[in-house]
Length: 474
Image 1 (spheres, one colour):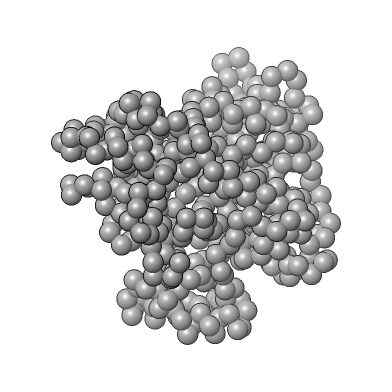
Image 2: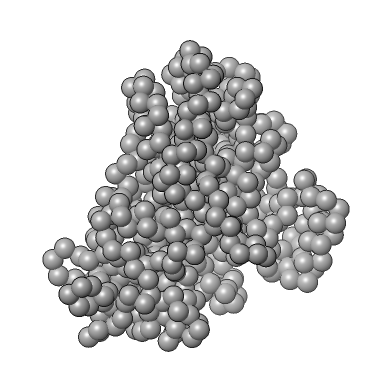
């Protein structure tokens, strides 16, 4: 496929309806557009009543917004999903092995596959984790792998989210909304379920409990609080799992265990699903100003008294410079060729790469190595001369802070508009649960869609929306 040709997941590149969409297309053709417009409004009202929102941070106070939702599902065949899930499993196994290695023997560095300074000088590398054995050997209990598609069988990994991946609540609410509004669609199409995710998550977390756990492991979700952009998700998952949602002030170290305050006194926690960043997790070991974490929790963790999911220090696997080494990482730890490919990446810390990027800024996407949410990036083809000049100065001043990638022709899927179906660019974040000896990839994931015509930015904070993702039973 040429660099300018765009693959439409419903209509292909030749305008012929693709098989995964045939059942949906037959249904849509017989639907009254007025009814569908009413259903779109109903979906928005459901999201508003449920409180499915996120916070956008700017110069002023955080602004709470409704997550835009599109009623047209994104549909993936079972055969396509089989290959995708195999590639995701392979990648997640490699990420866990990589994390264990860099905090222990660093064999990949000794073998010359990754430069030592890429680890040692990385801001996300956590010296406190050196020599620590997490319960069950699991570092990344919950992983989100961001995928983009450029052709019928062409999927690329855009990013790895191994620290605190978000968005699974939107995946679940999207499906619940579609089931409620269009039950007949699910009778026509054999769609794999995602609704068991909260049960699977609790079971997976419990399987990672430390050796000191007795009976049914006690699981809790640690949130920074109601002002966090993902608070809805924290509360949603705690409720769906049937576990306590706690903040730092609810917890303390008691007799060598992390315990939560209850009406009957303090109760030890075995597994803490934390949605608090490393730096704020423990004011005694990290940021002393933090009021979000638990004083001494890292000492309990290192002594084997609690499981923290995801493990502290996993953020280095999110680093976009480390991402550029993922093909080598996969091959080094699995002995296999990567099933899923990376997007070509230039590490601006390298002189030759920097020179190329500076010469081709108008054609490239430039990202901060620790950036997220669509912030701190340049999309060359849509950037103004002023924006390109600003980024040129940033790159020259701190080249090691950036990587660059080609501007891909992301696939499109239909969204519902007043004129009918209109193509918009998408990505996909499947969610993966890891426990000792088991990797579970939820069939589907979160499809994020760029609702603005021609836009490649799918992040909700940047004007994107979401849609239900179907994996068919072939």
